[in-house]
Image (cartoon, rainbow, N blue to C red; front, side, top):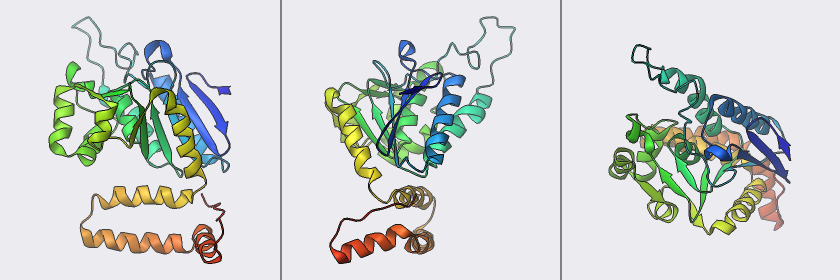
Length: 268
């Protein structure tokens, strides 16, 4: 296992696991941690041998959101001091991190252990599939400190669970248990705590053997189609399907189907 400053990196076959590693602070974000995580994601994207990423947290929690003691956001107790520019923090760190996850050329799984709060919750929800342990919970904690959801929360929440439920989560900031998160369609699956790591690994291994370029393009197509009308979505499907139809994985998948054999996918 390799260690960067605040991220643990490990490999099992074609699956790379990135572990947020500030357990003493429930893996709350600092600017240095977000920089390290982006670098680890970029390294996975650039490594042809990696075909799926699992994102999880060390210790008792997945990620408690922004560490308010980080100098980039910590408010001064002196009223004469100017307030911190949280918008700059978003622009410089959260926006590029969220976009890096969303634009990965391979699937990204979040394995949520314990609490996922604030930006930590929304980082997980921005992944392609979210597994959570039974004791995990999701909290849109922003309203508790006079802020709005960030790290993509305003876009993700209403698309995942509808406007009414999204506003309930964002305005009240109540803890949402993992089992209920699955029931309302916020996450893919809730599993027993002791099964989380193995379930995430099994799912990642399954995805890594699939045509991962097509999986990443499916994510992109759905994201773009959510902003289009039906006819334009159909036109986008035509353009993207033409691209996929020229790729090796389609030719291999179709040939394997016709020849009644297991396909070997290599595109990325």
